[in-house]
Length: 176
Image (cartoon, rainbow, N blue to C red):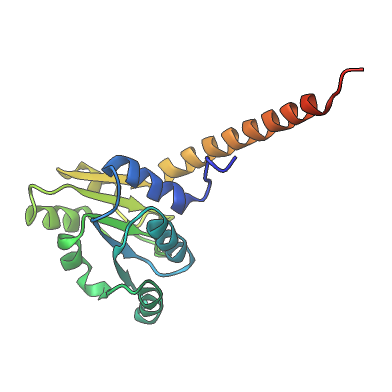
């Protein structure tokens, strides 16, 4: 039962780990310091990411999360510069519009043409314009994709629970 995690942040980080072959040694820029940001930060450390940089539209909330992680904080206004140095960007803001445009992603990638960049967008609505994934060397994973995987994970958990109940029932039956 424990094999199929269902939290979207955990699924997203696991997907990044699978895609990148691990998170150790990669710089992760975490944009968003609310509840989803905290859950994502925990998942990141659980999966071996320790080079995390925090950014938030709220400097105070960003500072609190950065302090909890022992991580540096970057002002929201400097996010483009921080993206240049990062290997992974994870967004989880409560913004009503995209905070990362395709133009920004393209500009960042023009300064690092030989490096791949993974973006995990956990925002709803999207934090990152969907066409950002069309930029060369950019892998964009959206919340919509993760929600489908989360539903599949729930189905697997339900099947595993039903199977466990059946096995327990047949094991407790004793022949007469």
